[in-house]
Image (tube, rainbow, N blue to C red):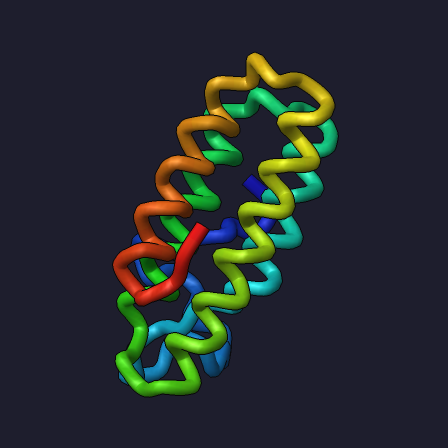
Length: 115
């Protein structure tokens, strides 16, 4: 395929790409959330988009344990609840969104936030 892959699982990209260094990969959480929000605007019941959003949040949450990171995580999770509220206003029967909201509330509770 001629399109670049979002995930380079085989390590095929050897063309001088700085992303293939020995340091651990990082996730641009803002870019991931923006991408999946765009996907959800087109299809609010996309299981894959909701699942990827969950994965990105967990990956980011497990990234580090410093105080600034947790404050940023709480802010992101609050924004996620706002996003859920917007989608649930469009269709209150969107069980993908309800499931994601429940997940976010659980994460928020685990990092000392409240609903």
